[in-house]
Image 1 (spheres, rainbow, N blue to C red):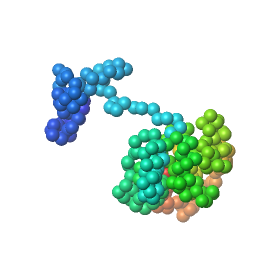
Image 2: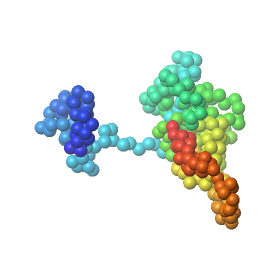
Image 3: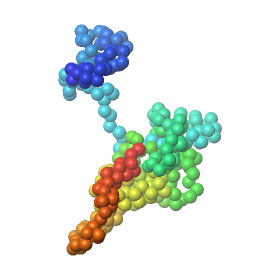
Image 4: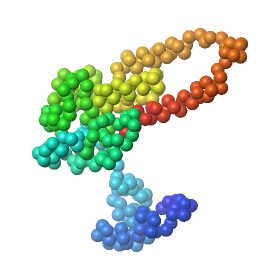
Length: 286
């Protein structure tokens, strides 16, 4: 609390009217219908009411961190589908397993040049919510999304809060969920991948192409990131090819100054590294 107060002092932000987190313990107690403790500030009040003895004497996170289900992902419910009928609205209210997540609307559908990694489903959604796998793939999915072209799986999930075992349906039957008891190898072979279920077939192909161009050695790799679902031989091939090219005998430097790279090209090479990192962060953001 003292460190936080010093930070506010340094930034001239200690005016109570402008600092909501410093309201009195009495006010906090009244809001929660609790007896007023004999402590002066919000931090002390939070410690006073904390029942978690894991961090005694420390201000706990509020709300506390919670685990995300290992096979959970939010469905991006299309606004156009809800607009079709009141029955569709009632279907969501009846079968959604949580309160809808309203992080859409406004300029979400047109607020960029469409060149970011966000899927069209993300732009077209009215909200994100959760359904059981069986009900989603067997009932809602064919109604909510265009699946007329069996070579192009549509984007369905939002990447926010997606569990690490999230997957699309079976590749051979989009109305059947991917069995959670399958091994990673079986899921990779027979199920629509985590990435394809989020970005859709077309956008994922574009993002993977950027990934291969920017990071051919797959140095930047994390669970369920772009390229992480590619077959291991393909990723290894990219690394092997790069190793072969780096191990070949380098060409001797030219003694002719005119053959040296110009200042502009030298600067372009230096600038390429941060540019590559920026592109990598872009395609893996959501």
